[in-house]
Image (cartoon, rainbow, N blue to C red):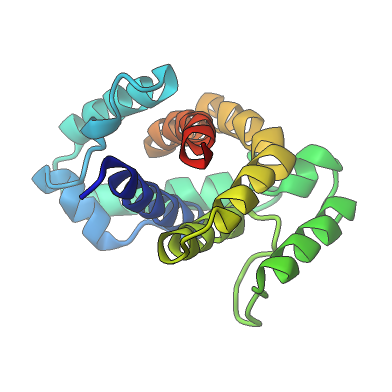
Length: 211
């Protein structure tokens, strides 16, 4: 398989993984994989970005501390709840409007809805988060990755490039910095570094894919 197709598949799987990590509490299987040492560490991306490298080292250190599945699963669930749900306001709000408009449901949310409609997608009624949630934005990138692999033109890659420039890269790096330094973050420290690094890497790779 050509290297370009390999990377298209890789980025698709990364965005799917990040969407899951930011959408809901980690499943028990993830805790089990961490304890067993079977969690897929993204070693193949090492040296491509300093934040990715730091994230990988943080993940490897975290895995070394994972000894009991029940304890790890409970810790992962509590961490997600404290960081992104509450009680009270989230210490690291995972919403673009909070970083761009400094309030929930600001004008940026309307812009995002237009982008999604243009791409032919709409949030399902049972989806638990608004369209500016980082999980929804990662799902959108995952969706465009899937379309790009099926399409012989650069249409969907161009859409991703524009979405990264107009939305993701305007707020997610700051969000990741806040997530990394939060006192409640443990597992999500590596997620923060990896997410920030991967977005920067992927944006540069898009330029190459579009040439």
